[in-house]
Image 1 (cartoon, rainbow, N blue to C red):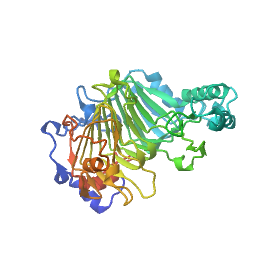
Image 2 (tube, helix red, strand yellow):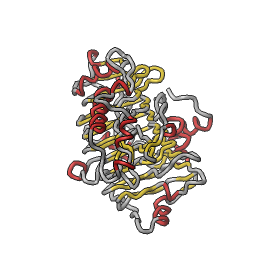
Image 3 (cartoon, rainbow, N blue to C red):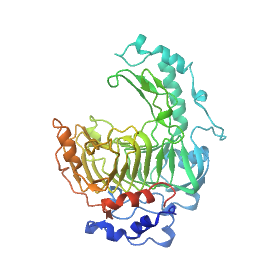
Length: 441
């Protein structure tokens, strides 16, 4: 159930019909589901609700029988229910908090438990200090080999494959996946709902002195990865760094010791994804759609994603960053707080076809509208009817005026049709803030 909202928010929610813009005729709400399918565990994505509703639609594990309906509360139980990512229809209900860094008996594992072959952070720092190693080549040698071997041991625990025809849904109070990296890889027809994904952290980041002007620490493990998969619905989840904020991390070699990667990545030919009513919070590089400019062979014509009614709060960048795909981004609320690190929200990447309409941006006085969009070799986007602090604002015009050498044209070349409801952007902050995230089904 939704958490209690203020009276004016309830009024906005009740008055959604009057607050809505015209939606396409073919995107009308689907009829009520049969009673047996009304529980969140057996819910399917409504017809017309974003790219994941295209074609065969997305039903997840709705057809699961009793033998393949699980309630799990430990990592071992979750791994057993997933069964290596097999395609048998299944429903997995997550109860309580599951920590990926735990052994088969449920005992916690620390970074020291994964370290092998003599790896030690102090030794790694000493071996690859730019003052002695230099900045022209990536680390090689015994400590880098030990780091990679240690990372592989952690990866074997925290990365779990999700197969086709699967629904994973949180039940009860505060269902949470800690430190886990769920991978929907080369699968079809998957639903992930009502979960908090927190702190997928890498014990063994790699130093790369050639990354950028001053080098960077690079980490593995996203909270959720859609890799070569199709028909995926990601709904009413919360993604956060939570207990391990970047602000608390040390700096080595002048760069933050970054232990987090993305919150949600959609890559390697993935296609037909709807992400709705999620809260993406307190993170740096948040959503990456397409991981390489050189992936045209797999990504051209793919990476079709819908983002609607999501909350992005205290996000530094990539909300999303897009390559190749036709991405429909509407009715999302972007909140930048005073003093937070902020780079941009909408990344217009190589051959991307991004549509951004009827979104709301809440910005402090220190962040101008020209900073919302970032150029990443993309040539065009559609940007219309977005508001900044309640006022309709020409975000693309502001960007182009501030960046005359990297002008982005104003037509993405396609018109989204798979929308069940488009709310007026002025109402989006109330509607989204009260409805997005885990625990608000």
